Structures are given as structure tokens and as C-alpha cells.
Length: 285
Length: 257
Image (cartoon, rainbow over all chains, first blue to last red; front, side):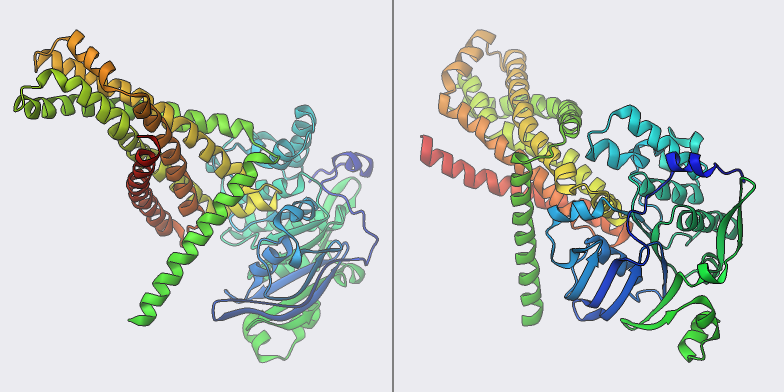
């Protein structure tokens, strides 16, 4: 796979990382949420540091996607505090949240692409609609990110003309357009065949390791979760390669396993695999 | 039984509360930035131009059948030449606004509910918010503006077509000459009638589109939910059109006549 040089990358970079390393970018403090009588989250606390990755696992209905929606302020918690890039999103008004969201990118389950817009319009949506940037500048940026996810030729197609994997890649491109500091992935590989899922996994790794974007992935696809956690993207002689992660890189990636509204496990891939906990064993089997 | 009734009541109150909140946010979206001008123009086209055919046909046939029916009744009093007065007053004051609103409800209200409902269940609304766009400003305000502007215009056209349809029937079927018919039309319409015919569709247009948007944005439960929302939007908006028409008519008669 061809890759641009670091200097080229600085101009076509998909995202920026202005924070210092190890600065908390997302922090949950005793967050609780219930829908009617059903408790979804009960006293959840965790912190995502800048440039790091959290992979949230859990059974269906465990509240994984809810965590991402809470980070974006799409839902409000019943209790607790949620700090994103220093903003207390749990108590912010919708109009104030727009500023917080401008630093976040979200890849929704199934993509959530706008049916009536072309791929180009989808990817450039935020810049076309919510900024005063010249059209030429936006078009250039859209071309950059579409090229980054390998869909440079697909700009004028409609979402309905794309395969499932291509739709996810467009969703990733859309999330990247405004150079987010944090990327949130909601089941990015669910429903995809293993080979297509692998291309999405590689995109996620690439963004984490080459662009140093902080990220949270919600999934129940264990194969993809462990692949992302145990591989890193490196450049060798100008070529991009995905190799087993060095110990220092592996330490930057943590798993969270949710069960009954609580965090049942938090730790690295090796610890998760080696856990003697019956639920974890049953979950991983 | 009491529990069921209480839950139904709570649900109904919640719907009204959410609808009023939506109206409040639309009001705020109308007077503060950003305003999505291109979307307003698109909706003016979709709601206005797109509804022309159905409104033309409805108006023309309603005026024609009104002339046919009223001609028979007026004959009993030897007042056939007054058919123009009856058709014009009925079309302008009542049938034009209500039938146009009902037709637009069927065509546009259902479409809005289905479109916004689909966007809800496929997370496109959440995606809009995540991308920093307020869905009320982007999706609801343009539709409400377009509905409020275009339904009165469509009503005027429907009234005109209805009166013209009545003229054709009067001339060819009832043997009432054009000059007599049009003279009656002019004599039979008062400024109050015209005001009533203009004020009503503004309110009805606003109501039917805002209800369609409200129902669409409250859609839950996948494609089945979208189907349910579409039906609910048409039923709720149609009933609202008739109910609002009654109360508005009563109010305007009290104020103007």
C-alpha cells in the first residue's frame, strides 16, 4: 500500500492533535443513565487520554453506543459528570454543544450517510454547511480525505450506490473532514465480511498511529477489536505496513467491558485474554 | 383501566408539550442565525410547485361540483343566477383553504413525516447534530416557512380554479351566462371574505407542516415506525386542519363580521 511521506502527510493529514500527550480528553465520572425503569449505565467512570484508544465491549443493550452519544451530548446523563476537551457536556445547552462537537468525529453504525446527498456532499457536509470556507478549499479537503480512505473516485456517487464497506469508509471520511481531535466509532465493522472489516480496521489503526487521533471504539466484534488493539501502522521505505504492536503502543490501547450498566473489566488486551473472570471467559469464547 | 387511561393521558400531554417545544424552537430558528436559505427555496419548490397539479384539480372539480349541486338547490327558490355568489363565497371562505390544506397534508405532510422519520431511524438526525447542525433549523424551519408561505398561494390558485370551474358548469350545464355568473361572483365577495380566505391557509399551512415535522422527528422503531409515523402524521394533521379551521372561522367571524 502506497503512503505519502511525512511532509506530504502534514498537508493532507486527516486530523490534528493539539493536546499534549496524556492530557485527559474524555472523562466520565460516576455517569448514570436509565430509560424509564431500565438502568443502562450505573456509575460509569473512565478517562481517555490524548492520542490513546479505548475499545468498549459488551453484550447488545449493555450501553456501549449510549456512551458515545453521551460524549457527543446527544443524550444527557441522569447523574455524574462528562468532560470532553475540558467542556462539561453533561450540563451544556444544545447550542453550546455545537462548539464541542466541532472537535469530535463520529462514525455511526451503518454509516448514517445522508441519502439525498452525494458522497462528496456527505463528506464535506460540515465544511459546506457550517463554515464560510471557499468552496474550492472545501472541495480540496473532501478530495484529500476521500483519497485517504481510498475512495477518491467515488465523490459523485450516491450512498445507495456504495457497498457496505464503502459506506463505512465514507462515514470515516466524513468524520475526518474537519480534522477532529477525538474519533468515536460505533460498531464500525458490524455487518461487514471479514476482508472488508479488515480494511476498516486498518483505517482505524492508521488514524490512531499516523494521525494520533484519540479514539473510542464500541464494538462486539472481538476479532476486529483484538486486531486493532494488537497491531500498529508503521512506514517502511515509504510503504505503509500493519505489524504486531510494540509493547509501548499496546499500552496505549485499553479495553472496557460493560456488564449490567457497570464497567466489568478495564485493562489491556493481554489482561483481557488472560482474565479468569467467568463472564469475560464466556464473553470471549 | 385507570392506569391505562393515566398512561394515555400522560402520553398525550407529553406529545403536546413536545410539539409546543418544537414550535418554540422553530420560532427561535426564524429570528436567529444560521438560516438555511437554500433549503427554504428547495422546500418552497417541493411544497409549492410540487403540489400545483393536485391543488388545481381539486379546486377545479370542487368548484364545478359545487355549481352543479347548488344549481339544483337554488332552482327550488328560483335563484339559479346566484350560483356564482354561492360558489365564490364557499370556495374563498371555506372550501379553498380547507381542501387545499387537506390535499397538501396528504401529499406533503406524509412525505415530511416519512422523510424525517427515515432520517431518525437511520441515525441521520443524530449525524446532523454530531456534525454541528441543529436539525430544527436545517430541516424543520425551511419546511414550516415553505408550508406557511405556499399553502396560501396554493389556496388562491385553488379558489380561482374553483370559481372558474363553477363558471364552466354554470354556463354549459345550468345555462347561466358568464356575465351573470361573474357579476354575482364580484357582488358576492366582501373584503372580509377575502381576508378570511387568506388568513386561514396561513394558519393551516403552518399547522399541517409543523405536525408532519413533529411526528417525523418522534419516529421510533425502524421501518415499521416510519410507516406508523406517516399514517399518524396524515391523520393528526387532517384532524388538526378541520379543528383549527372551525375555531379559526369562529374567531374570524367574531372579529370581522
